[in-house]
Image (cartoon, rainbow, N blue to C red):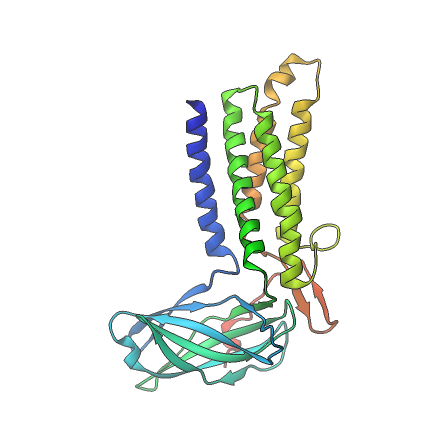
Length: 300
């Protein structure tokens, strides 16, 4: 019965973490609220874009606008401003085209393709019928190469189950079950396969590098995976080595709870934090740098 309760709580925690990662990761567009002519628009700003595989010089960036009723009729146009990031050059303006998809207004803009891991900063300006304008906040868009869907999905599934088993093992450690070591071993094996085999493979496809964490770089996604698996390996070894102290042997299973908490903290860090970024000055990919958005007064 304790196992059922532990699995139930582990599933709840894991699903909550998945929701958090989905809404903070780069694959999920940033959300903003824009107001023009006393009308509010919910705007969706992509933060990741796949580079064309046909060596095209430009790619389509699509922003989504949604509102209540026919509020789209209150805007007469829009302008997208973009520039390379990081950089001090002026913004370039481009006039987008519009299309409809169900109840959403799609703003389609052609932007220049950047090198792998290259970024642009951009913002949207809406033009109202009465001459009013509204600027969005600046967003950062990173370009990546194509990743085979099968590789990406398998990576995501393994990381999901690694976190699920991590949560279960940590919670189950409180029950005092003597056979908990097998669940810890499963956690380590799945985490290794998802984070140290498929993870580097996904990164190689997307950004051309196998490993960008310590000691080669400062990619937080790689580093947090490294910290998590080290915590589990240490906890597993400490639970397998025979010790003469019966008191320590009785309490050492709580090291699995500590490892699960370390993993939970690691998973709370948004995906791709301080990840790969193209350096336009050196022509290389660097890591460990966070996006620093310039103040709004610098906008056009």
